[in-house]
Image (cartoon, rainbow, N blue to C red):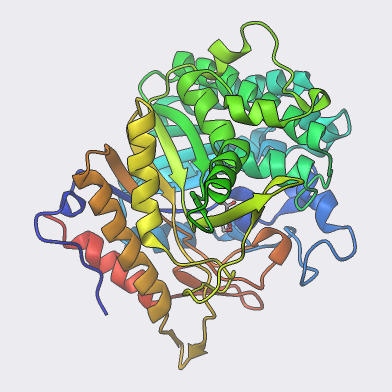
Length: 444
Ligand code: GCO
């Protein structure tokens, strides 16, 4: 099977940026060459990671980066999205860790030599543990530490980075990490979740200012994940529940950065002690104009009314699922993009992650992941449809370049377009990877 889009689609243009994405903790390994982060601590808790794995070796990318660059180049992509490990590049006293910076500098050089644009994310969840020991994202001070880190990186790398993202998915850091306790640092408390979210948003705004100062030539923005919410039934109660879920979970991040306010219905839904700790001037900092918005999309979610909590997620039934148990629903990606474009004055949008975990089988050294290919095919069409409906979308990144450490699911779930054998660290391009490379190459 080949990947295709309709004739004359904007997705066939060489100006449309295609890339593959990864993140530091999920692929790098070499934990002995950096300070500990909150995910090291979390992984060490018995039972926290389903298969007992951790990030100490991961895909060993730290030692295999040259081979991985060759792999990226072989995909014909325009761009590579990766993240910098904060505890690798900065010491506890705030001074740079030279060997950590050099690792990323050689990666940037390697990308430039291959004519591949660098999309660099500053924070993909790996907070230095010493900051967590002082309260982590519960502390306003952490936002200022993040600004210092952004300052250091953008002074060192400047516009060798085509695009900086401040944060990846603050929803996951705050909601999963501090409100539900599913992710590091494993805190489950409503007020903590909302406080962490606010400080993350503040960190984004503060960092964006220094990125714009230090690297005005790069495209600077933020990456949000969104799972558009749908009502289980057409009843007014369920429809209200779906809107509230969106305001509490996803629009909680979009509206502050795009319009400078938290969603009113969500604020009204939260008890007094869980209101976000907004200081005067914060919302202006948070809503600083961005060069682009990155969106990560995997699935939609369905909600029904719940008299106690306001809304409850209803698990998918009778629909196609990925190996994560997530509904495959390309139409919801189009709906999401069009809806955001209707509600806000959007900056240019990049789809910074999209992809699927599937049950891959390696047979005769081949991985014929036709189900993943169908997933990509459907979602490329969804992006095409959104552009035709007026959304300014500039690029699309497949998650992920490699099978990698899938957080609490360890190595059990494979999202890569490249298969990784974790015993030998051998990489094998899957059928989806071959098709992606061919599709990108055929652009006009
Ligand atoms: C993200 C992710 C990735 C995950 C992917 C699949 O940015 O969404 O955190 O790190 O691996 O989303 O769950």
